Length: 132
Length: 303
Image 1 (tube, one colour):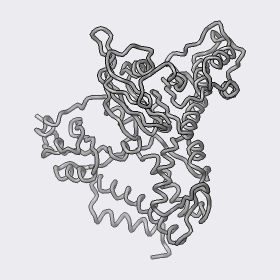
Image 2 (cartoon, rainbow over the protein chains, first blue to last red):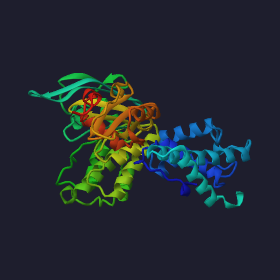
Image 3 (cartoon, rainbow over the protein chains, first blue to last red):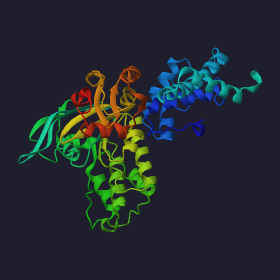
């Protein structure tokens, strides 16, 4: 798992959120499977060279979001209740955040609602042609 | 687990106050990064904390108690300038530390020196600046001290060894030890520290959790169609920490609810309004540089 996880400390996005997003994304993409164990806080902190309390905060957040469960002494695991559901909601979380950034940018450069709708339709035609 | 509390520390040299009423609480088991421009007073704070400089006034407490000679057993310090005896070998420094500190682990020191590629048989005078730093770091991290005070522990080190020092700091944090360190490499502080404090001209100007500072603070930027505009009091909004402008471009540093302030800026007539995330370097630079337009100037519009 560390192989697919990287953080960019110079980014304006808090490091703990970067970890949360990447775990969610990995679940969504099936890179992290149900029941799979996450590295310990210390191990991940050393792998990513980030503060262990930052990793611990990310794990707390993931637990709160029902993505992982932690049992003392055993470690943290990808949750298995409503597995498909959680992968699917993780996938839409990832997509929603990306769309939100794009829409905010569109608004900031002064596009009108209809211009944006047109852009989205063009994008849908390109990426989801069979669903037309 | 050890905590440090600095209260209203002052250190003056004649008329000049190097540290001017500085207070900071470093919780047990945290990694605290101290940032500040050159001459901000970081090294003086470290020296006063450790009794290496006489404080003019103020109190420093370790676990609630003032510094006594026994406290030194529990604090490992890497000074800004390495203090090595030029005629002694690195191995002799290891031996000297073994005699001086009960918990010092000479095998660990040699292991760290090997990781930094420092030859123990070398005399200090033959070491480069980076190697000297590496020796000081190796000696400090072999101390098994619950408190580490590191004044620029990566200065002169190559990127590999810099990363190595960060790993050592992170390892100490994972063991529940407290680390207070200063660095001009903000990217390193961003990685290793959970808390930061920014000093400027002897005073504390900003303090907080790195991730919270990033979440809370955004730049809201907008462009006005011409140089005559009014912000309708936005610059005086309590969420707006500072306002800068260059001709038609207005940049607001906003705490909390940046989207709302962005909407207000759009309503005031700005176009291209966007909310920009800040990294620690941006946050640092804002903390130590004065705003280039006061709220009043902007609110009145351009002349």
